[in-house]
Length: 309
Figure 1 (spheres, rainbow, N blue to C red):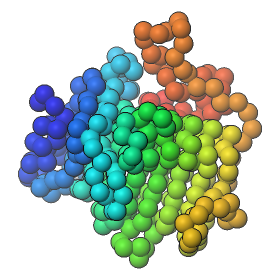
Figure 2: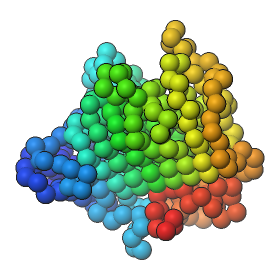
Figure 3: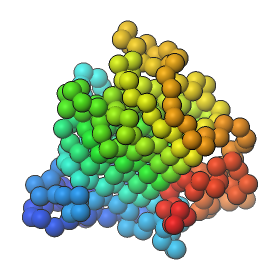
Figure 4: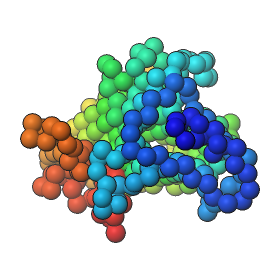
């Protein structure tokens, strides 16, 4: 297909019991409308709906230039009473999004969500080996991954210059906490709002082997959320506020709740691979990953799953 929109329309029309995959070749994909992922298929945990790059980062021939890059140029729509745009509005269970780079939306009057799942009755979303690059003044990203419902896994992703990397909102009409969700092997850097927000999420939430660097808040949870989270094998460096709490008056204040912390490193220097004059026309394969001697290098966080095997 010539466009992502046409490919997604075909994907959404598929029926039957078999898994279905839409592969994106290398290139820049400007989208002019908010895209919806839905399905008439009988999807399951094994028979999934997948949108992924045709060449994935663990392929030996993969280069940064091979990662399909999506930029949203859609106009704002009213979503939940606010002007918003999104790249993928997920309206199906058992969805995987893999190996894609997401940029923001140049409209400065709307909140942009690259991956957005507002339906609190949905389940099983996997976001893996993706990169989210925002720019507060040019291509803002409000929340890179904004989800309600159960069973969301965010793994091996890079988030840079977004307002928020991930917000786990609520499930089943606020009647129960989000269950069976996790975030691991991710790099979150320069997110000016913060790294993660768990509005109402169960204490079974797992957060491990992540690097959080130069962010506003490390973590926010809502005042009525009494869950105690376990954080394991992470680096959290240069955050303005470690724990925040959203209050009933819609303000965010410093929180006094506790984490169970296991091997959390807060001292040292994180240095990420960036572009430089010597590599202006090419991008290092390890772009936005820690250099070898950097704090957090040994965690194998980032888009290369093979590094963790």
